[in-house]
Image (cartoon, one colour):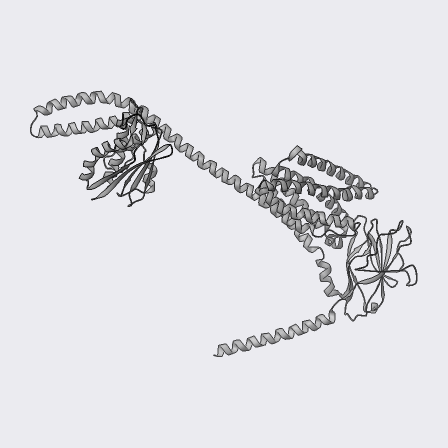
Length: 638
């Protein structure tokens, strides 16, 4: 109970502290909440000689209203600068500051009344500033003037202005564009890993992996160099960032088309390949122009801006439309890669085209934002396509390996069979003649012998007969061709086999059941046919216990005759099943394994096959498949 009481007491104290902290936080937020300014005034610069060295007085010039919902419009002809006048509110901040998230201009100056508080000058075309201007407590209610000059059409403050505590506004200032840098860095790292892994792939997948890594790396470079974070905190690297921004874009477009071509082909009339060649040539032209403009200290910046931004934008729109059309055609053919590509690229293309169209509608007064997140979806779809292709390739390799293993096993088996056949044929012929002579003399001696000599001679004769049977099996295995081929009636043949094997089955306590349909005919030799199934049935009989049943079932399905020999004997495990038919492999004490080898060779010579199914303790089933032959004139075996 004490423990419960202490727990309740501690919980109540924590709740009280949280409520107190929450009220303090709320009061703090109320005290230090930032003021938002959405309206200001603007006036155009005086002309080419306007350098913004002094802030204009309130009565000078022609001021007009502007704001977040009132765009200033295009610059007048011959004017490249503008002034923005912002009336600061009455504030009571300890460390006041003004945060401007987006200000367009290349050269800017910020004044508080007549005092210059901040200046920025960029020699490269990146006119998006993010400013955090510190103020003093004496600036309460004063007027803030911002002068900006540009080489483009957009100029001035783009979004709302915030006035508040420096410690609060600096969080927004630092976070502006930081997520783009993190995202771009992740892309570049993924591209590097993918490029290194590409060296372990085959030639086809290597080209896809390299082009994909270029697309991902170019996307990462675009995300980093397009972010205002770089130009705000690392402005000394701004010119280099602009160069990398252009190089990333000029590398992305042909690499993307090449990747599409490698995945889906050149398209009808090789339109994808032709467009890729054009893009590569134009990108090389822009890169040469970039080098020339950089070496000439940006003297050709306007021409370069036109070919690398305006024209490239239209090429991107054409590329997206072309690839979308091709993807739709491939998707209609139910190509899985095309469907995946359509989802990713469709998202990126529609987003990119929409933003580009809006960019041109706004006359460049818009910063592309959503494209990088759409590219995340697109890159994920490309990775899925590559991963799927690698997985499919892996499955094919595994399948080929399995088939190769089967072919090797079959080849080894054929080689073994060939060697054994040759050896069996040569040995059997050489041994049979002296064996028959020896048996004849032993039989003569046994007729005159008595007592133990007669017993010994009888044992010798039985062993000689056993040897003769083995030699017969050898010859059958070595040469399974039939001397006389007949049309056999399966039902009649099995009646003969049943009459032969039934006494042996009864002797072992079993019984036999035969179910053979009418009109089942096969081509073969009657004695060889009987020998093959006698070997199978004999093995089934020997596997029975004190009692058991053997089913012989024959039926026809289509162009084949199926013969099942089922028993409920002791069965076999998988290891024994896999070795059935191997030379000299047998479960019997005195078995040679030649019986099943002969059976396999006879059925094989009849263009059939034998399959064993068994489970330890549950019996064995042999399924033999033979081609169905046309019925002769009679109904019996010929």
